[in-house]
Image 1 (cartoon, helix red, strand yellow):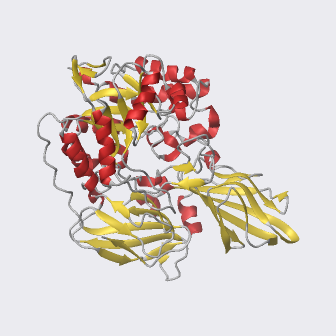
Image 2 (cartoon, rainbow, N blue to C red):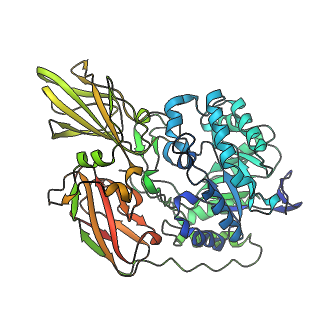
Image 3 (cartoon, one colour):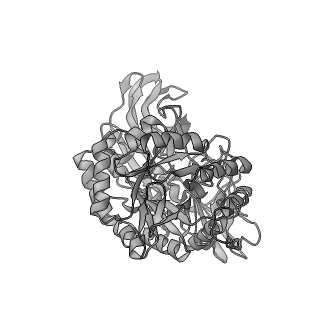
Length: 580
């Protein structure tokens, strides 16, 4: 057993000064069978610690229904076996460019902006969640022979709010649940963020990507004593659909890392290995300096331009960081592990079967809602996926503009079964007027809930109404199609027919024969937008607007011989799929 404490100027392990050289690696963004390889890569880069967030919404998809909470414990056991320490950041809010910042949709749909405050109803749910989760952490603390040396209270709260009572509740709750290792907070190195996010008696750390000396000077104004730590050293960045790929040059990033360490500080490289937003769990941001503008959806890849890339391979940044970190290592660095096995040869297959969206919805959709006004995704219980809204414009009446208010995020509109356009703005008008009577369908997809800033906890779907001229059209039927409904049993009920060459929206099925299975990239030439599965494993969203051009397929998902690929295309399909 060991004791890890916070000293006046250093972290102490059994009274001996230690420096944390940590790297972020999220267990939920890496296939479990590849954890050991990624952890070995982290060690080989020169790190002695791993940091992970914990996404509440992944583990409690419905209130009081938990899903594989033990995955965190298994990951921490793997960290220990790899000879690394661990930092755990359980939230309850995590940001992480993850759907809803990790908060469950059923919670934010009910409480809205009351989350992340000292609201009694919100705290009831936080208390229950932490009591379910934290035994995985408590049993693996360093003072019990495990790897966990620190636990975070909330996350970057100073970027969001100033409810000191809420932060104190989180600290007290963590301790009441048995956390005995040091607690900490992390915020940007700005006065208002540190003022809003810090807690007396709890170590404050700073998040930044450059300018370490200036950042630590700001931190010291708020915390004169205690070890310095950059809890998120941003060595790269994430990407949004439709933007250019974010890239940070290796030499400059390594110099910035060296500056952190020259200050005598500890560091957590964010990200050491980013991984993938499997399952459609990517979040979204709002544009602008105040993060309240247009929606910017995050891509499926969370490569982050990290030193260990999405496929687990070392990059130029890996070698540059390894050179810097070797100066602070106790002894020689371990060798770099062999790369994972790759697919032996590219293989392409034409789509064989297809089912229209209506047929897929009939087979896999939730119960239909029938009401006066459009329900939100949260009211329908849809976390990831899409909703079909159906309404009838009365008639006879002349053509008038058809508009949607409060639209989040993207709607493909059909009038009397004919595609009439795509709406994207929050207040959008269909290009061509609509005469009555007419049946209107709007297929709305959530592109990811906001994970950062003042618009956290906003609802999805049609949050206002549908108008014909100035008149609201009442009488709405709505039905959700959730990503989680696409299981082998569920897809087996879908009414497939032989695929034509028309490329219509719907669910496509292809069979790919593989000789020499391994890690691969799934390419979808000519496809537009949707979700894709390989052997029932959801790789996530694809979208032809870029910058992501293919989806990472973990080797454990690919089978020797026959592999089945499902593609849910929402706008216009291509002829084939390709594993490379």
